[in-house]
Length: 147
Image (cartoon, rainbow, N blue to C red):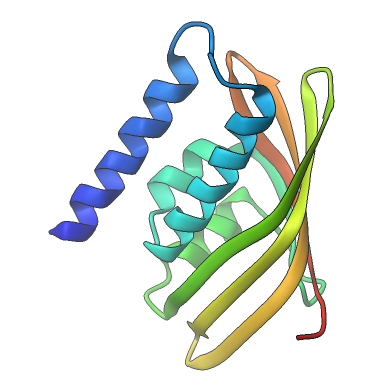
């Protein structure tokens, strides 16, 4: 029940922020907030919230080299064997190119997937586009770094 309430609040905040009038915060601030929302949605396994963040032709390159599309990415989040316990980001930088942004940073992800534990510290690069009055991620890439 609590998970449903939190997921609903996240989605409401996202939709309000994306569809409201002129933003008082900067595009950079908005993108950092969306990145943090992405992490929270993964932690809560909220594929509905993530579906609003990733574009229809989203491409995801994982730390191990696997490439997936939007459907596979969302299916992995929905998989009951996906059990994250930590999802956080730091050192986030945003570079704007008009209606496109490249967001980089360091992430920490911990939990288990398909019965196998993981504890990843890595870098991420996400490419976002601003289209139809909202930001959507079109590509994400992660790579592991030493602890």
